[in-house]
Length: 395
Image (cartoon, rainbow, N blue to C red; front, side, top):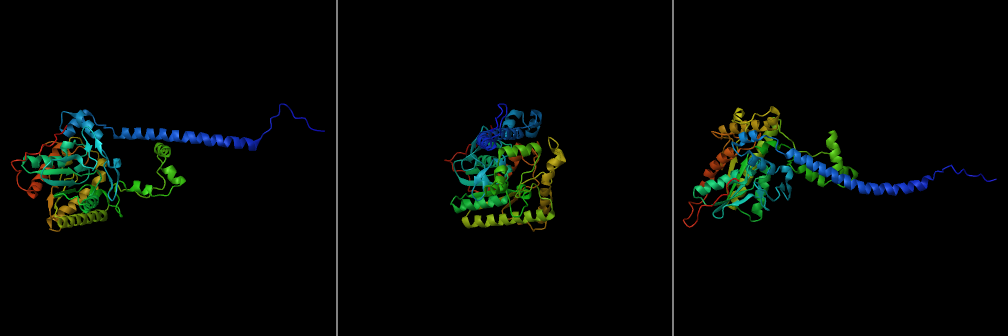
């Protein structure tokens, strides 16, 4: 006799149910994951924007800039790019992208503020964030001051600010070699070194972009997808979880004497290589040993005091500059085409707007001092038919 099924008994149809649910789950994930990634990227961008926001009060900004216009300098600081804002560039790894801001402009060729001047010898100024003009308007950067001073002194020149935040002497050397190799030859090349060289002590050498490029070369896998996921990045940030598989990192500071000596040797070698290339191609060259706040300068003069941890990453510059001064005193420092400005500081006004970057007053002093040497390297006074070049004033 056949068994009668109960009307109230529900039988499980497991295989059919499973195969019916799986496609729905896949479809749900296919829809939700992109939305979650998009949302996570928005949150990360907002957090990044918040971290860039200027947290100084108007009163503090006025002190740092010796200015009665703190609002203007707040805008300048908010526009100022960092090395992480760079875009890929062959051989040099990265450069600043073109931008047209109210106070900060960069041309398609990576020149800050455009070429200043339309006649005379061509002067290209290389360096890191101090040359680029971190926290300064276009007309206040060191190269802009060089151009203005040369013009006032009747020297015809076209000045280019080729500084890039985070660059040090190796990238300057490579960029200069690439210029010469492509027939792009300035009359005078100026290289401002001293700070960033002693923040890069890794072997092999690594720039602020090396980690990003290393990740791009890793084969696609679940691990790389997770590493590059905005959602996973947000999750790691919220819970303080380190990024998996990060083996290539830029050292934040140089701590040992051996690292400092290695950086000194590299700086010396890069200068010699640059000088040799310049001589072969008929380019006049000038090396500037820039002022740093860890050597000679009395940090008690600062408009705003700094906490010890704010200066901690720059300890190596103190060691390196002490060694440079010692080598210079004993005649062991290679000083060909050198302008030593390590002890330079403004007689009045604040010198630094943050731990290491120059105030408008200090940038002006450095630019005017450099212009005296650059002027001696240029042809004579402007011809009567040529008027002095108008340099854009700080906005």
